[in-house]
Structures are given as structure tokens and as C-alpha cells.
Length: 230
Ligand SMILES: *[C@@H]1O[C@H](CO)[C@@H](O)[C@H](O)[C@H]1NC(C)=O
Ligand SMILES: *[C@@H]1O[C@H](CO)[C@@H](O)[C@H](O)[C@H]1NC(C)=O
Image (cartoon, rainbow, N blue to C red):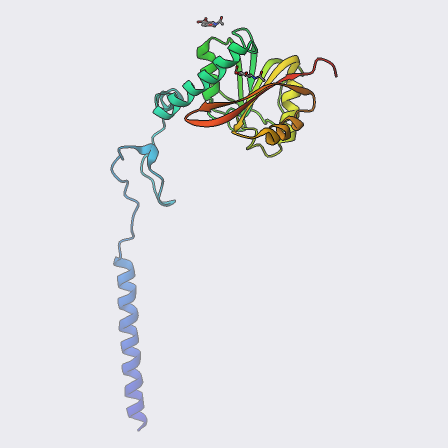
């Protein structure tokens, strides 16, 4: 009886040894999945790395090439020409001219800067939280790095997206000169909403507000004058 058990145990231990050896061999022989660089993709800028193990070549696109590509896109051109129409009306209203010193706060990728520059405005500054050189430099619209009264015209098309609209409005009023002009473009809004926006600008009075078409949709343009006193 005991011998029988002994034989069974021997057999079990032999089988375990064989299994363990096979596993070990298979681990040793197993070829790990290596990171073989894929063939150069056609549009590298559209390819997102799939894992940290993705070593395929990342193409560095020089800034001027990136900008050439962006600025020749259809959506860029349409938006710039919408801004050109928008600002031409300000020329006609007599609140903007080629010699105005203009600040565009929260200027995004800089469509408005390009429009103004092409129209002949000589001194245009664009700022945004994230820079888009050479059109837009980095600055916080809640804390603009400019002297009081540094600009003749301050514009923003992104007041609605501001984290603290009241702070942004305050900074726009601080950086525009006394008697200078603040221009805000917002989604089309009614009289009450216009009043709500005006309330943010405590040191300005309304010059004109009108509904205009911008890139095929209606927006409201509010033009304010910084009060000469205070
Ligand atoms: C502004 O400058 C541009 C380019 O120099 C010129 O074509 C345009 O006539 C000027 N506009 C005004 C109102 O002077
Ligand atoms: C505001 O400006 C627009 C466009 O120049 C003009 O048509 C409108 O009459 C002006 N509104 C007021 C109240 O001045």
C-alpha cells in the first residue's frame, strides 16, 4: 500500500517537473512583442501615439510651415474675412482707423489680428492664455500685462467664455485710454442681455449695439466708450 502511494507521488512530482520545465522553456523562447516602428504615416500630425511603446518617428513641423497650413485652410480664411467685414463697419462708425493702437484680448488663434493687420491697422496686439505665434502672445485676460490706458481700442470676441467676465471687463477698461473704445462680440442677444453685459463695464457707456452676421450666424456687437472722467 505504502509503495503504491510512493509511486503515485513520484509520478505526480515527475509530471509537475515536466510542466514547469515546459512553461519555463516557453517563456524563454517566447519572442516579446517589440515596438517595430510603423511605416511613416502620410499625415503624421493626425496620428496619435497608441502607447508609451510607440517609437515611430514624430515629425517636427516648423512653426512657419504649421502656420502656412493653418492660414491657408478654408475655415481660417472665412473667419478672417468675417472679421474684416466686422472691423470695416467700425472704420465706418469712426471708432477705428489705421493709426489706432488695438488690443485683442482672448484672441484665440489670432483671426482678428490677421484681419486688422491686413486692413492696414499698424499697431495690433493679440493675447491669449495659450500663445499662437507670431499673431498672439501669451497673457491672462484676467491680468493683462499692459499699462493703464495703453490702447485706443480693446476688442474681445470671447467674453462669454471667460472664467471671470467681470475681471476681464475690468482689465479691458483699465488698458483702454480715457475716451477710447471697447468692442465686444457675443452670441446674438436681446436688450436685457446687452444690459447685463454693459453692467460688467462699469466705467464705459454704450455707443452702439447692433446685430451683425458673422460666419453665417448672427452675433451682437457692442461698442462702448470709456468715460473720460473717473
Ligand atoms: C489703411 O491702410 C491700408 C493699407 O495701407 C490702406 O489701403 C487703407 O486705405 C487705409 N485706410 C484708411 C481708412 O486710411
Ligand atoms: C449702430 O451702428 C450701425 C452700423 O453702423 C447703425 O446701422 C446703427 O444705426 C447704429 N445704431 C445706433 C443706435 O447708433
